[in-house]
Image (cartoon, rainbow, N blue to C red; front, side, top):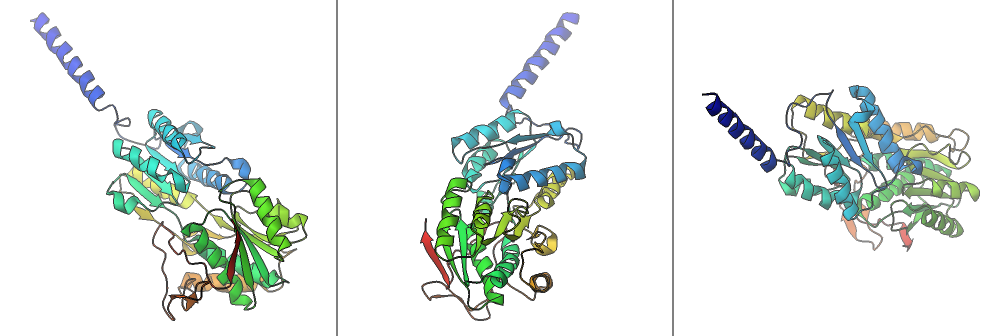
Length: 373
């Protein structure tokens, strides 16, 4: 009888081991709690950029504090290129037992989708992407926000400050995310200064300070006296300061980097989504396929105004515009809007609404000139 029991027990163990081997991609079985959850991040840069990744890290820390998580429950992968290195980084986070993984750069999306197909019990959340709605994967999600609202407000500061009526903009990539951003910046400036125009140079890199400095200098040499940016570092702002020009930063409050140049910055609070997504997982509720939020949700805004640099009336103008955005009375992309080839792209009275998590307004508006990149 004992021999039979031993044989049966061995058979059960062999079956169990075989089952684990067969389901080895299910790394995170069992209940997920705030005590045992593991969270992974894949970043294109690191916090030394004082911009994009720095601000994502702030969001992570605020999420960690809000949810009472320990340091060892969060794993960051920094300086990951938009290449197969992303695949490697995500798989390392899977192997480390992460229950939810966030990737924060546009070019990470295809790698993340491929791995999400393999690991159905892990949640994958991608910032700045647009493919979640077409994947039909319940564990893959896109998130972003209405940063164009904050850029519109920051453009007001630029439009009131310029003396040459020529703004400059250092842009990373010729993608809708970037184009819709500088369009909104220009429209904000135009709302308070009907004579303003803008020149744009692309660096074709998200975070490459030497190219950002070179582009900023070229814009200043072309007569631009206030610079905006969609790139990750503070190089545009420090170049503005070195040339006695002014600027509007991005991602984080950049006044410290260039105290005599920075008027304000368009900034994010990524913790709003991080807290929401992680809490949803802990509570067992679905994470939306697409998620977005704007100024009224606290997802984005402008940073503190530099009172030593801004033009008179800037605070009042920005506050009024913010109130109107929150009330729904101000729509950034309201027609009539023409592109820089004089084609009508938004009809009079119509409003272009950006889809959730996927900026798609890619018309270079009338009054904006691309001069490089």
